[in-house]
Image (cartoon, rainbow, N blue to C red; front, side, top):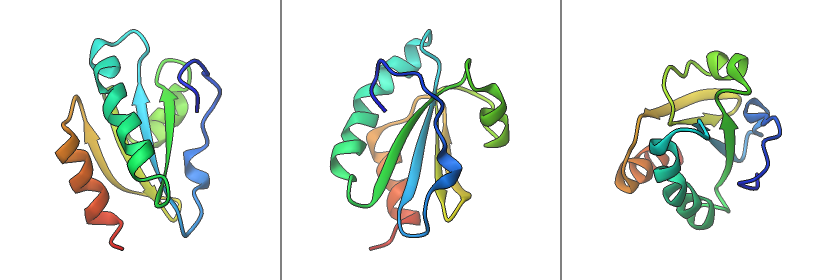
Length: 106
């Protein structure tokens, strides 16, 4: 999703062959903005294995609750329509990489 776009994301529709990493953010949050470059890095480096979606926590609070997210920023990994992993709060690139590798073995 483009950074300027705030359309509804549909992370639970991930197909069985491609996982989805949902970046739950608040546009007013400094911590969320600081994670933008890490999420962009994941989009580029994992584009064949992983779809990355941005979800505005303020606009889509129902979906955020359904994903079990309690803080923004958060990253939620969805595979085969189920949440298989998550990272809450500001995280490092290594933590994101570890989450992806743990659940998406080649």
